[in-house]
Each structure stands twice: as C-alpha cells, then as structure tokens.
Image (cartoon, rainbow, N blue to C red; front, top):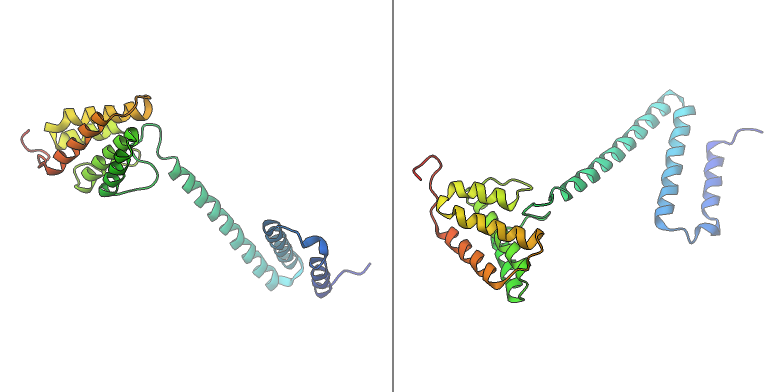
Length: 205
C-alpha cells in the first residue's frame, strides 16, 4: 500500500469533517478534535518534513507546551489567591475600600442583618487603618492581629480594638448572633478612630 500524501490526507480529513455525525458535536469536543489534529500534523511534520520543517514544527510544539504550562500555573495562582483567606482571616478575596465597607455595613444594618453588618464595620475599621498607614496591609490578617497592631499605633483604643476583634470572631466563627448593640458599639469605635490622632511610633505613650 502506497503511503498517503499530505494533500490526500488533508482531503480525507476535510471529507471526514463533513460527515453528518459531527453535526451535533459540542463546541469543546470540536475544539479538542481540531487541536488534536493540529498537533498530529505538527508531529508528522517534525518526523518527516525535513530538517527545516522539523525545526519549525518542534518550535511550535514547544510554544504550545509553554502556553499550556502557563495556563496551568495561572489557574494554580488563582486557586491559591482564592484560598488565602484562611480560617480566621478578616478579609475575603475581593479588596474593597474603607468607604465601600462602611456603605455595605450601613446597608446590612438597615436590613437588620447584624452579623454581616458587624463584619463589614470591622473590615471598614481595618481598611481605614491600612489606608492611613497605621497598620500594614497584610493578606490573611485576622481580627486579633489587627487589634494587636492597631493598638500599638493607637494605645488608647487598644482595649476597644481587642473587644471589637472578639465580637467579630464571635459572630463569624463562634455562632454568636449579631446584635444592634454590638454593631452600634463598633460603629462608634469606627467614628472615634477616624477622628483620633495616632501617637507616632517611638513617641511617648
């Protein structure tokens, strides 16, 4: 049996693609089949297309492999970022400003969703302190870590910050229902922190 030439093989492939059984083929299956055929043609060229054709095909295959590896690495990084909010973390995946957290807290409080409102109000406090460079922007920070670091910059509020962190942990992880009183207390702390002047690091306490 004589070997099939490239033009004849292409004609056979075209006739096969016109086969009615492919009419209901899903788009992912069709793309996968096209890709497999493309890679197969490249492999054929690398094996029997001469030195120049083999080098070009090898380069293209290498670029495809690099692209696939880059796509896999990107997906792994996305998954890693999605999982950075470990148990106890104060913030979720999406970064909001302090003003956006306050707006969310006020909306939730108006709907009497006190647990979520308390969470958003403490996030507003944390983001405000970060925006004012009073604490470092640390991914995965817990409420307790925030209170400890902020208490060093604003020692007169250290006790209230620690209490606010405990309230956040109680409603978030301890199953304690949020209340209007807890939310109002945290809102008052937020307002006073925004108006307070922090003590410079290394200055008198």
